[in-house]
Image (cartoon, rainbow, N blue to C red; front, side, top):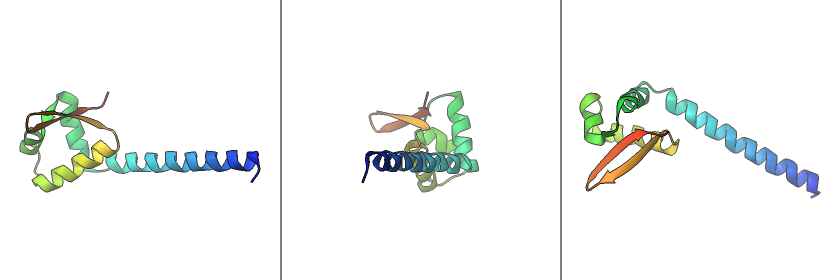
Length: 90
């Protein structure tokens, strides 16, 4: 493999990763419940319990939505004892 082919392959792999990341981000934002979570967090940091009290979601569904938002780096978390707090990533 020549140097130019290797560089082209690396560029293609980079572009594919960027496309995948962009696709995941758009999927995360395309869900009404995740947008509601983000709107709540735009106002202030909230615990999982506080988020759950404001949305009509099961604990399991909320956890799945929060995992997607973490995966796509839209939210930050911090732990205080057994409580996990979420905030919008700056």
